[in-house]
Length: 214
Image (tube, rainbow, N blue to C red; front, side, top):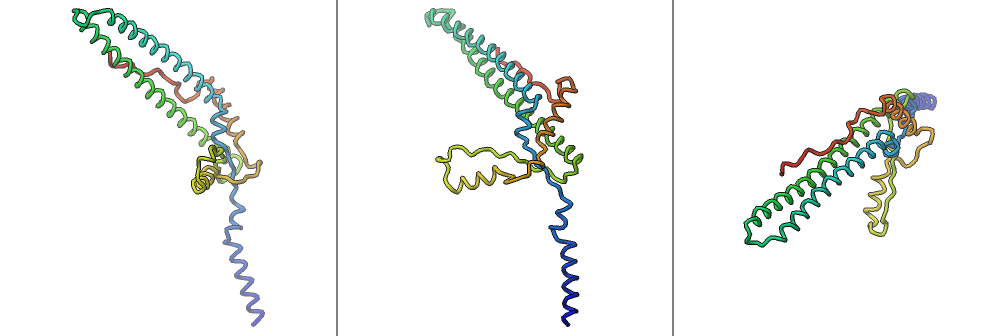
């Protein structure tokens, strides 16, 4: 009876070892990557930031010119008597110019914000694709994001919300540095970008379409 129990126990142990998660885990290799670090360090992202800054300055100069023209119109209007023949026309022109200025500002802000969102989304797609390529080349089964932002303003967060924020913001609690492919992804993306003549595949920011006002 004892020998039979021993045999059955041995068989059960063998079956458990064959199907246990610990045994199957040997076939799973997980890498980590910090996508935010890659994004902020990418040459393409830096070039896009510089282009966006230049476009913003150009648009700002155009808006300043419009604003100065409106001030000139207002100063001219102030010199006229309200009951003079020219007052009504110039007042209408000033109103139209003011509306056009506001529409131009709103349109420029919306356009630039949309352009930035499209660019960041496209760059994150590149990071994800490159992470997959490197993972396959290195034999990894999965890549987990290791971005862990700091929680600021602790005094303004209650204990429950703080715990939730810490859990949500920290996808990976610990990882062996040898599993980090962040630098590999960054090097590969910059290499592809430079090989394309620093033109990349993400469209550069464009100026907003002209306002419909006059």
